[in-house]
Image 1 (cartoon, rainbow, N blue to C red):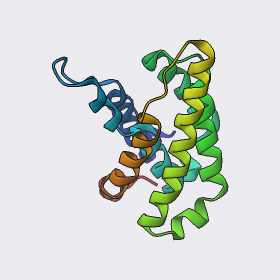
Image 2 (cartoon, rainbow, N blue to C red):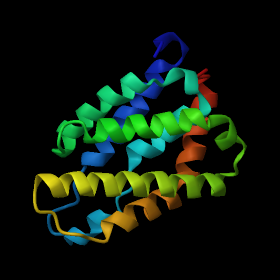
Image 3 (cartoon, one colour):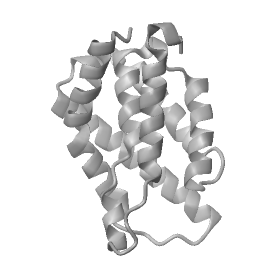
Length: 164
C-alpha cells in the first residue's frame, strides 16, 4: 500500500475494524449480546478489494490475518486463510460485484461471512470443545444489515480523501 495514494487510509480503516472486533461489552451486560457484533474486518476488506482491488494484496491480508489470530486468540492461520480467501474471491469477481446493487452485495457478504464464521467455528472445535451458538448465523445477518451504512461511510471517505 503506497501511503502517497491513500494507502494510509486503507491501513487506518483496517486497524479501526480490528479494534472494533476486540472491543468488549460492559461486564454487567448479558453475554448473548456479543452475538450481535458484526464482522467489521471482513466488511472493510470487502469494500477496499471491490473498490480499489490493486491496492489490497493477498500476502498483506494473510499477514493481517495472523495479527487478528493473536487479537482473537484463534489458532494461527485461521483468519489468514479467511482473509486471503475473501480477498481472492472479491478480486476474482470485483468487476461483477461493482455492478451489483448494495442489496445484492449484502447477499454476497452474507454468504462470505457465514462461510468464514463456520470455518472459524470448525477450527476452534478441532482445537477445543466449543459449543454451538446462534452467533454463527447472527453475525452474518448483522454484518449484512450494516453493509449499506459501512459502504456509504467508506465510499465518502474514499472520495473525500481521493484514495485511488
